Length: 498
Image 1: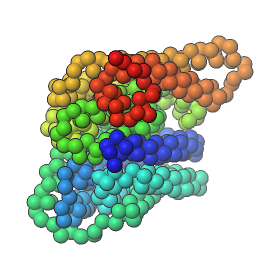
Image 2 (image 1 turned 60 degrees about the vertical axis):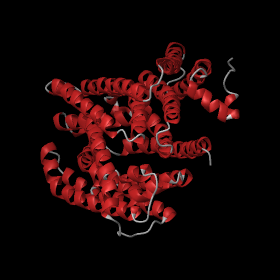
Image 3 (image 1 turned 180 degrees about the horizontal axis):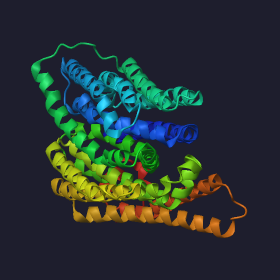
């Protein structure tokens, strides 16, 4: 199968899983927000943040190392399984021992017990990461999509909602997550059925320690950068504000996270397989940045404008304190996902040292901003620190990749113009829709649900209008010309240029 067809297949199945999981996730979030208190979500969020101190090293980047390796030899899978299970077992033990320390640090009763139960997922993940990595390497996107949907629906839909209905409070969230990860492990192994052997050479083991170790270190730094805000809020402000912040962060990222992950999960194995072919990597980067960036910034603009109705409809009136946090975090969505695409490109090129330096610099920047705000800052102020960090990160990554891949400045400018047009179009039409409803239909349209539906529809219209306008600009990109030449049906969407 050609790279273009493989990409289209991956995106198609990814779209299926995204629509299913995101739709169900919204339903789950809406119901659970009404069954549970903000403190329950805050407690689980803090437990997950605490466990992530270990999780990035627990699997040691085994899946990316499997995908990135040009050829798998006999013993490579055994080496991956040995490293993954061995390291994950070690960190499972560390999590059990240190759980009381996290409970003491945050001064939250029952946090230690939640951490200890959730730490079992280290062992489950240590096993499943090999199967999932092999499925991604084989570009088995259909199987991955089906596994994702089944595990999420059963984990959160049946177990999670059922447990919440019967009053299990925070343990309903724990049970949902545990069920999802267990089903993912079982189903992925059932599909790929790799040998359960530990026989391998020291050289094979060193590959996973070398590549996986660097990958995990970068992931850990990214984790610190993306979770310091939650740690600070949980420590200084308590479980309830942490719950408000956690739900706002989820709402800000949910509409973009799954679509962006589809593209990057599809692109990483494809880009890794084409090695150092400069032109193809440049084309992949430009296309993914244009697509992900346009969508992410459009959603960012829409969330910023419609934040009050989003919170009221999805979470309910007891979550109104999340509105200003959501508005601020919406400003970080666009740069977060463009930086994510840039990071995947660096991974596929094995430029991990460059990525490590960038992420470490951003961690230091965020620490400085949070220390400045720690004494008197609110949750909104901490969210502002995140926004500043993400904008600086995407700027640095853009400069670095422009130099590494020798991308013409003209192409960068064209992509920025396209993204800006789509975002302005989407945000403006939503704003005008809200203004029209508030000015003329206040007595008729009282339901936030109806109002939010109108806003979503307006956002979709804005996205389409923005896309129709930008196609006259995007068609001038070399990457877009490359795609048009190899996909005749796709070419019909764009005007012809001399």
